[in-house]
Length: 272
Image (cartoon, rainbow, N blue to C red; front, side, top):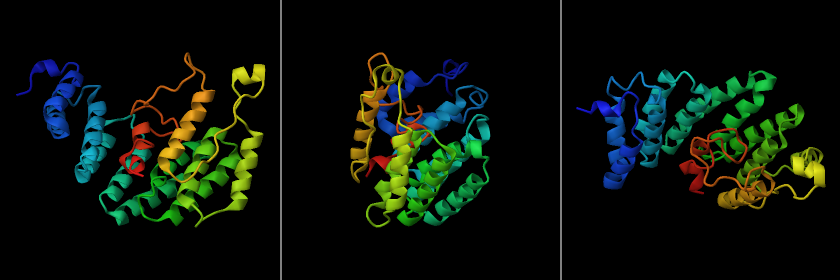
């Protein structure tokens, strides 16, 4: 029987840390499953956060079917959950589990929803789709590049934030390599970034000081470090630095619009 002290409100942080030290991730999963299965936890405002933690731990342990089931549960219990993002995570989990057919079907359904989204919402929908395809889990780089290229053209047409456009283009070029090169689109993006350069308050006062990050190669970590260095040079903050590493639930620093843990920190991305 779990002690009442764990509830009202649900607070597992200290216990999770201790459990991890003593038994590792499997013990953490056992604890979370025990607590989240207790009727006393279901109405707690922290329930969804700890369910999200369970999904993360199951993913790290490569227990993908359980992570998928937990993600469906998150959609049911969390009114604030972005359903499309969670369904995208489920698609990615199916891919990681080797079920590419199911993953592809889910992605195509989400893509159809994306195509019917209102213009003002397309950048948000793009961010979700970009997160799904950038790791190329489906083993279909041609499809990934086609989707990213399509979203790039939409972004240029609708004048998306240049940082977002740049992030999309970096992922497209990483996946495309020389096999799916598109010099015309490259030039369109280059011109767009030149004409919509990021400008901070300091730059407005003192003039340009930093060049925009440029695509450095095909290595995922190389891209991440290059973009981080560029953002460090431009960000407004007390120390002029990005907090690093980002919080796993924070918006990803790369500009995709997704959570860090589901974007650049995702196991499929960091493995490259």
